[in-house]
Length: 62
Image (cartoon, rainbow, N blue to C red; front, side):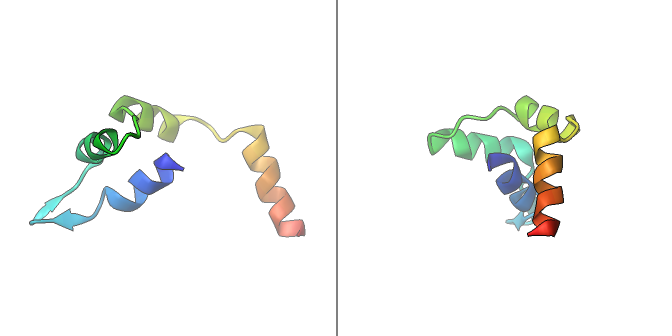
């Protein structure tokens, strides 16, 4: 998932600077994956869906 990728990369330090969300979104756009920083932040604020919660519950049973 793109959101997870950004989460994993945004704190990386490259040439003495943290990458941040905006530069990662720009690089992804150049690679053909379009996601706006606003979309990333909206997804981070959104409550987990019922499906996601149920999947997590089922994982503990599996």
